[in-house]
Amino acid sequence: MILFLASVAHAAGSKLFFSDVDVEVGSRTSKNLEDGETIDDEAEPGDTVEFRIEVQSNFTNAENLDIEDITVEVTIEEIDDGDDFEDESSDFDLSPGRDKRVTVQFEVPLEVDEDTFDVIIRAEGEDENGTDHTAEMRLKLEVNKETHMLQITRNTLNPAEVACNRRNVQVGVTVINIGNEDEEDVSIQILNPDLEVDIDENIGELEAEPNEDTSKFSKTYSFSVPNGAESGSYPITVRALYDDDRRKAEETMTLTVNDCGTTEPIVDEEEEEQQAEEDEDVMNGGSDEDQATTVVVQQIPPDTTVTTEGFFKSNGFIVAIIVAEIIAVVVGIILIVTLVARRE
Image (cartoon, rainbow, N blue to C red; front, top):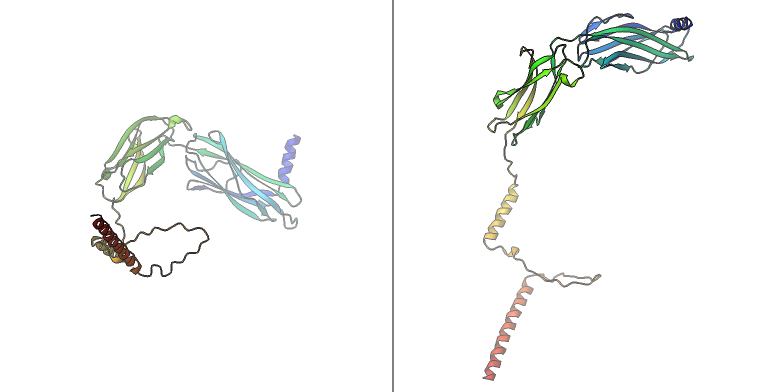
């Protein structure tokens, strides 16, 4: 009894309260909700649930006390495979009589049980005198699931663009049963008639058991683009057929096909003319400027200064050497002939 009276006294003394609470589920909004109410609209797997909460200070101007570092926390209990969803707003201050609207948002898990979940909204802060102030309210969120519902959660294309190499295009597919009934004879199809893509596989049963391996299927398929396929964009359809083929989950990706062309080297016109002239010189035995002379250079000790200015000023020096060599050869021949003649 003492604890109860203490909690009542604390609540009565708190200067924080919720002046308005709206909840949007999907695209539908429940307005002006009160403590203990059930949110009007039911959520479905994958829905976004947004809480728009207005908090107000009940201090008067005469009391002239601010409530500082206020945070608003929203908890959806046990919605995530037995775990809670929790999130809170950024902190803020409130002057006497002022209010502040904050938004906290969640996404309902795809793999969730059909159930009613408790929602706790709590605001707390501290006034300038160090006194704590809190406000709390509870709501209920109902999650409803379709009887038959499969969803494709992964549809990837690798590569998404091809040119010369058109083989082994890979399609990644993951399908989950998010409905209330087991689905038998589920089929996966990957289709594009223009590219002759026609993959069809019966994957059997997907059970309606959230967060279990038996409720999902994942696989990577591959195909090749025909060499004759024209360049362009091609839609690749990924489809899951279920409920005796009366229902389907479907996603589309785009594969871009480019021509496999050759790249010609770009040659500058001046460079091309110069190369043509050089080729012609080679065919004619080369020009004077192209003639090369091999010079054997003697190793020079370090720190030796060498000057060659005017050494090869012209080709005359080379001609003189050649003439001298010819004269030496001729003189040698004459000497040899003279010696032979004397012996005879």
